[in-house]
Amino acid sequence: MAITAKELAKELGVSPAAVSIALNGRTGISEKKRQIILEAAESAGLRRDSRKTPVSPVIHLVIFKKHGMVYGDTPFFSALLEGVSAQVSESGCRLQVSYFYAAQDDKEQLQGIASSDCAGILLLATEMEYEDLCCFMALKLPVVILDSFFENAPFDSVVINNVQGAVQAVEYLLACGHRHLGHIRSSVEISNFYERHIGCLKGVKDCVEGGRCTLDTIFTGSTHETAYRDMNRYLEENPVLPTAFFADNDIIAGGCMRALREHGYNIPEDVSIVGFDDVPTANVGFPGLTTVNVPKEYLGKFAVQKLLERIRSKEPTPTTKTCVNTALVIRDTVKRL
Image (cartoon, rainbow, N blue to C red):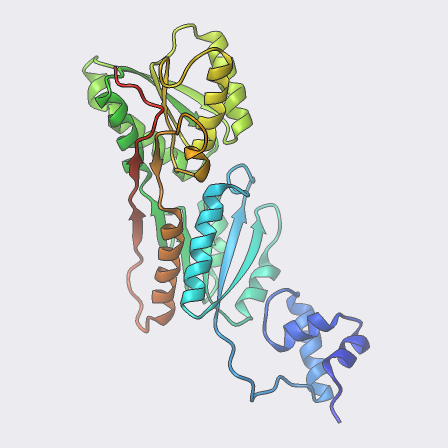
């Protein structure tokens, strides 16, 4: 008579959960441990019941953290992941989430994903660089990159149209009569911030070259506290301020607004500001932040749809880059001059 999974776990000195994971082809244990369990189960006559209803395929969301300065428990990523989860559920699949860290060797973790019932990988690559993709290129699984783009990567990408959004923001400030602008720019090296910088320069290019406006740059980090600190320093060193600022995201804008208020500046009466992302807190309190809306849930849903297309496709097709457009949301932090 075949032993039970619980008895096999006791015999091998592993948890019953590890035996279940191995027998059902799920991730969560090393490949070495999986093989030991499967071989012992085979010898003991313990097999997965072939009469079981087939389990639904798994979409594996891999969140890659290189430095942790961008990705975190923020309103932006919460909404993005809600969109991913909702679309996976609607498609009849299951969602599993793994965190990968640049400082660790993730080969074993990747092998676990590849040997499971994973149908495809959605790779949240906000903090990734091209060299970080190498281990994913070796997988024989469909992969879609979310929130970043790499020119030579053999994967589809779904990204924010950051350039468009930044152009919208600074053109609105110019249309409101502002001619001395400041870009509160994050020094964190990710493509989103770089593209917003390019969009800011593009939006003011004609005006600056024609001598009709000026653009200052204030560097900061990516958090409320670093923005607050760096804006305080800027205010102490610069008695003459731009009349309006464009911040790389709403969190940075919030830190800068706090510093401005503490220095006696009223918003928008004394200085105007526009953010980016349109997180829920942008419309909490007074004044409501004028910002660039990113359809975060839609971004996540569309990336899942793109991955499902790859999973179901029988023929290879060229990779695509999809830019999800933004929209300016006008609230109360910009004054018309």
